[in-house]
Image 1 (cartoon, rainbow, N blue to C red):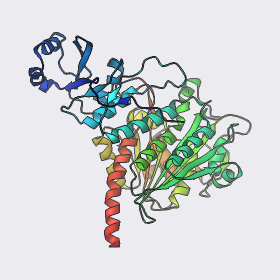
Image 2 (cartoon, rainbow, N blue to C red; image 1 turned 30 degrees about the vertical axis):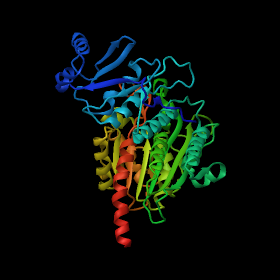
Image 3 (cartoon, rainbow, N blue to C red; image 1 turned 180 degrees about the horizontal axis):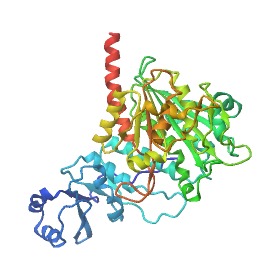
Image 4 (cartoon, one colour; image 1 turned 45 degrees about the horizontal axis):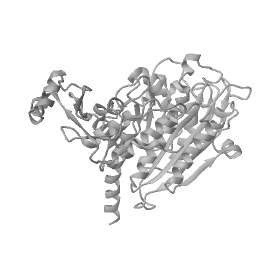
Length: 470
């Protein structure tokens, strides 16, 4: 899936200014403006509250704009500009003010996104004049990529197409491909094969391995795994029709992993990177797995299928087993895994589970600092025996109606190599309605936070290893 160009242009004499003002600085701002402009703003009742926008008239039409920020210091304070500013000839530049200019660029571009691949464009977004701000441009482009993948209808993005998107991303960065299907997948990833057996579209494990230009064989290994269920019917434990309406987004974890990998590679971090996504469709047919079936897994554990709609953890258990055997310095997975996480935290805050407190604290701090929130939930050992089975070594669900997100994480933990520093993100990957910077539809949750957290931690780890070697 090719990238679409961001609505950016270069600063030139035709670009018009956007002044961003907070209520506490409004009087000082008005004192610097031409009297007629200040009178216009006062006459419009402009107060500087968040998302308040006034267009400035001139002899040639609209010659500028003033945006209220209120107390919002996030990128999303600028998230509605692209849709509200005139999109006629010439772009807009955001004048310096009491805000992070790179965050302003990011917020503008996040709000400019719309999924229009399959219909005529209703309105082009306004263009933003940008000088520098390379990180914001990278983060916006990665977010657009993730959103496009999640928003693509399932008939156009099946396991094969999702796998190809992963391979294409790796190829753009000179990575070595991973592609496993057919008999090799049945043998090496039996749980993934069991999930995908009900569909005419065969499952695929895809991804790549990559090494930064400054990395060596001793550099930290970051391993990423993603749930790529391109459509989830629930299998024989079929979902009600209303619950299926958004199930094209059940590959949102895989899409997020690809967006994160893109950011890590574009930053050329001194790491070794391994990316694996399980691309599969959970369908109903005579070949589909049934409740109470017992399946094999890559780790060798047998799993009783207590519910065919708990398929994401089966996809991930094989990937986590393989990845953890490589002894990574961080193993992180992303998955749209449980409704229980959404009940606990709502749609905007992904649940974080971790076996390593240092990594958890690093990622939580980065999420808070960069307005990409996460919230930690416990790997509560007291619930582990809820997964016991009288037929197999483990059941894929608990019979108890509690702590569904915790139980799912505990299930996956059983497949890790001992001592693996593991972080699991249970995310929603969707905006239920349009808000500034967050258009309705697919969303790239947490990739900015994780990217920043990995950057911060890897710098420390690399320095420690270099000191040890010296």
